[in-house]
Amino acid sequence: MAPAASVKAQSSYGQSQLDAGQTCWRETHDLRRAMIHFDAAMQWALEHGASELWDRAFCNRCALEIEAGEAGESLSELREIVLRSRDPETGFLAAYHMATAYDLTGDSKRARFYANIARDRVERLHRTDYRIGSLNQMGNLLLAASQFEEACSEYEQAYRLLSQEPSVELAMVLDNIGYCRLMQGRHQEAMLLLHRSLRMLLKLKLERPQAFTRLALCYAHLDLGRFRSALLHGMRALEIATTYDDPDSAKYALFLLGEVHNQLGNEELAYEHFCRLQQRFYPGAPNVPNVLMALDVRSLINLKA
Amino acid sequence: MSRKIRQVQLVGGKIRQLRKEHRLTQSELAGRIGVQQSDLSRMEQGEYRVSLDTLFRILAEFDLGVGEFFDDVARTTFTPQDVQLVRHFRSLPAEDQREVQEFIGFKRAKMLDSKKPSSDQ
Image 1 (cartoon, rainbow over the protein chains, first blue to last red):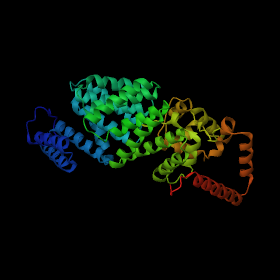
Image 2 (cartoon, chains in turn cyan, blue):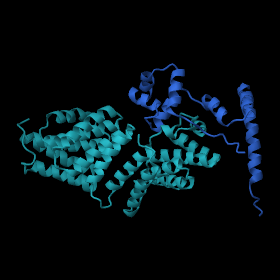
Image 3 (tube, one colour):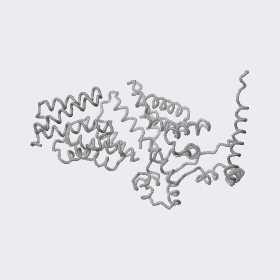
Image 4 (tube, rainbow over the protein chains, first blue to last red):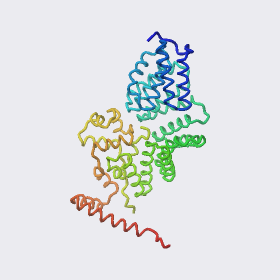
């Protein structure tokens, strides 16, 4: 490949294809069309020796592959870009996408490694959106690792950077901070944050993300012995999870609803929910309903692990 | 008085106890269930929470049934008569246990039927 060229300096066909791909993905989420633009940008960059443009287009292409769950073969090249890129934005994007890819495969150690690199690189950029993305990414990884105080600190930094106008991003950060507080046993604080998140989602008429917030609210009310409220949030979470085919939320909704019914003394209904959980998600483990009827496992469970 | 069997809380310390009873090191169990040894150590100390999937992988490693927790349950909620009844039940051959379960199922169905309001009313 020819010597590196600055991405910003290239007012070119390649650059226009890169921009078109980003716009297409942002506005239409049309993966196939966005890929065509990124491929065209990479082809142009290859022919004109524009290595930085090639790297940037490749990073964007990888983000789509990761989204589609097909990034396996591209990760070694993405890793090379993390090492070689002198453009801080490209370096950030490569590290950020590497972290995402490893997180999705359950390799939390490598995900944390690359998320740390991304966070380091983002400090050199004056891009609030990237900074928020990086803080969120690290928060999510820490949350999955039950490091609730540390995760909360990341989310709180993201919260301070976000516009305070209602948005799904702001609602999700509030949800995550609320969930961290819940896991730390700070229920009143958690309730305020989770209800604020839910009100925002209701105002924005966004239904799908409500499943996460309602599951956390169900858990919180269950912990506080407010079983009727727990039941209402759990049932709504299950409805939303079913409507939007969200298996993870459905799984935890069935688990929590079983727990609520168990606490209410509705043994038949508790057993029914645990049976539905077992039949749909653990068909090879017929003992799951009996185990859950006899054991309260809540203190070992992280809904966002 | 409520006859409901109250749930026993499963905590990290119990996981540690079960692991030791099954003669597994933290590294061995962590490797089998796909978590890091340091995370399993934190879990046993009550500082690390897992997904439902991981929890059921752990319980499957111990081939866990409710019976393993029977002594804990008995200490907290059962009367001596309950304990004796379950002990006797468990001493029966499998076929006899099935018959007893069927009989209990029949009795429970009869009891639930008697509680239903009449459709004529």
